[in-house]
Length: 546
Picture 1 (cartoon, one colour):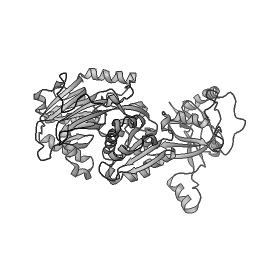
Picture 2: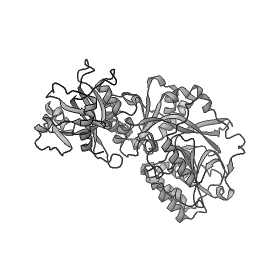
Picture 3: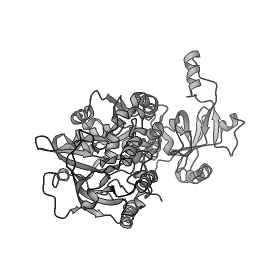
Picture 4: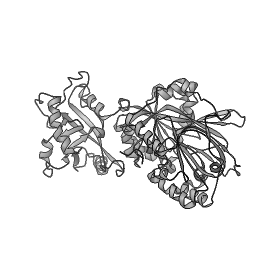
């Protein structure tokens, strides 16, 4: 909807919101009217002060405090604000509003308010916007009528319209940051790009740095869930993996904490699949932080992995993202020594193993739902149209039906040896994106109770396999013939390696973390974790585009 249409529509809404106009207008405040989509700056003293503005322009100019670099320079050096003029848009969407409060805190019902809002540097928020600016202005709303809800103040009305979820209005946030993430830049990313937005939104922040390997597991095991609304992982995908496993190690598998807390991630690491898949896919940390606050809490499926320990006990680990075995696992975990190269290390690892014609024989047992691509597409469409959600989590839902040491259930399908003896990629996931240029699981859904499985084998030619991998960026690899790639919706599976670990040169990767190279079994726990989803759904993929 264009700004002009919103501004025109506001006159209609004004009649519904109020039957009378304010008797006076303060000249030291920006005059505003409410529309269905946001706040309309009316044509008053602002336009008169700025001869360069016109009725058709998208913004006014006014002498409000300048928050730019030069504004801060003038204030720090000379004790006064820069004389530079700050632009005030004609229309401020509710989505752009971070906070609003009465100028006089003793008058909560006042229509004279301090507004904090953001402006991204591009209208194409997800693909082109790279940063945003935070602005504060004092306004006077002219047309609010609280007859429909006498207990709701003007500021609370605007806040409710500005946030899809009330829990994200001034939430209590536990920020957990890996100081070594993002090639050692995670803390500066947080201080420069994340914290200013959280502070402007009046979030209540508790900040913790991880001090040692798996420290986030200990943090999650010992935290008090009542103290927080949101656990915010400013990291790569490793810290969210540790958090969910730490919660699972609490009494009763942490069910009270899983039901109370929201867990999300902002991109501060080398792998940011969690935020890419849930918060719109922007590569900008600033934009993603803003969109996180405007997202909706939704239940997300987790995957439970069982493996035996050295003492033959069964260990249960949780996974939110993926498990892989074969070329991709070795390319990921086997190139840690090249992490200084950035993401190109992964591409180097893939190329080495691809042209080395590597294969990874195994036995694979699967509880298959369907591998028919038409059925998968229909399943995705039906789930999106009907917005299905799992039932509320109960303790019994966290008990596993069987584990890796049990007999394989008779209704599971054993993948033929012709495929598994020549397998080179097994990749199973619950989120569409594993990196910004790889939507490996375009049919993945937040809480449908299924995983997506991808299988390729050595008999696929190098040319075809290269074409498949190059198609992953657009999510079209699943359209290749089944003789070249298998794509299925599944409930459970078990993988049994039939090869030696070759002195530690082969890996099983779970959420990007290296796991013991031995048999493992995976099943879904539906709706176990509360996450945040922009517009209530995963980031758009090749199968979820409208």
